[in-house]
Image 1 (cartoon, helix red, strand yellow):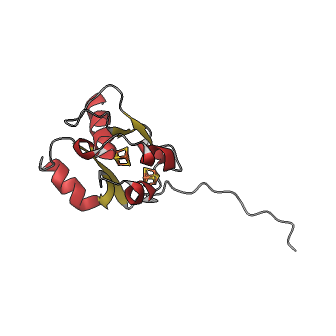
Image 2: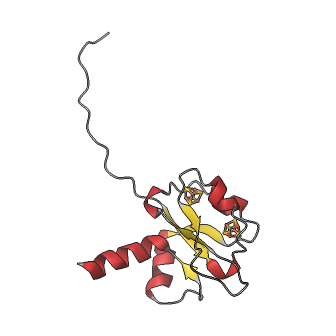
Length: 116
Ligand code: SF4
Ligand code: SF4
């Protein structure tokens, strides 16, 4: 057995393949995705009501998302899912998203750029 340790080199940040999309108008505040997200990415936005009168889900820590798809699988209303990054970016930049659709990762990038 070698007694020489391998140098520890930090891994480059992992690029997530997909982006999280939330259809806030379709959310019924059941909280299942919030409860089951293994990285505590999701939360209910108690400051907002959707057209159904519910507080919709939002991403409170999008950087922690690991693309596991648990939220997509568990949501009974198909209000949250992962989408192909490039397709989602095209739709986002073209302003072609339905009202109440949130892509928190892109919104975070936009607000960072605006702050610069
Ligand atoms: S994909 Fe996984 S980590 Fe990301 S928000 Fe959904 S449940 Fe959480
Ligand atoms: S599981 Fe679906 S309906 Fe329930 S809180 Fe999450 S996004 Fe909303």
